[in-house]
Image (cartoon, rainbow, N blue to C red):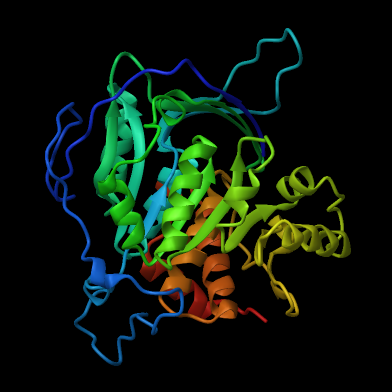
Length: 381
């Protein structure tokens, strides 16, 4: 995946109210108290398994099983993904026709939040959208996915919702151009207590690099101070990652291209990846989660032998957009549920396999039942 990020000038925003996700609400500027999670729910990353087992309680749904669990909190971007389906990328100065086009909700942060919600784990999204149709599209998609929107802000003063042009080629490969919009505009210099409280009450926090580093740093440090584990997805801006951010991250999630860019080292072979990961360890990251495409995935924990996970083959590949976000978020859900790291890798591989079989990012995020069914039937070593 190739990406280019464009950021507009800063503007100002007003707060978006938080309501029950089942309510049919529209985005509007106002400020009322939001709901929060009990501080006493703070837990470390090592939690008892909360995975649903039908033999124990066949009447209990995944959502009810996790009713009192500390939430997954995703802080990040929300985009309207404008898809165009093409046979090939245009050459310089060339105009080509697309066979199809549509606009769907996406953005790395919203993708990961939607994944958590669809996997029936309590999930909050902290982000910003514009006061426009794209913002409403994203809010509706997240709400329908079961994501709590108490901390989704509406940015006023004409700032558009972030959006991306996704050029989808045959075979599922894509190239993407991103316009930052509300994702990069007018975040407060200091995050409010309400946003930081939900971070501190989380079971795990997910970050990406499609919002300002200053926001990610505040969130990561608040989580670290509260004993909450943080996963940072490398996707997004291609600028150097601040050292103070990396030092507050527990797991760094990357693909080969991102790892090469961050470390300045080759990542074409597994041996080269291992050497680049060692540099990440020296930069302060103890665990590196690698997404290796058709070669599967791997988890590197400093001082331990690496864990490899092959792909779970997909029946067909229609669109790889959102597959990396699905993998990272589903890994996080499995981890906060107390699964072993090997089980987390398998769970994430199954979710990603299902994701690539559906067009779109958020629309392709699988539900818990589908992932569980695939895990039962797949022949994975």
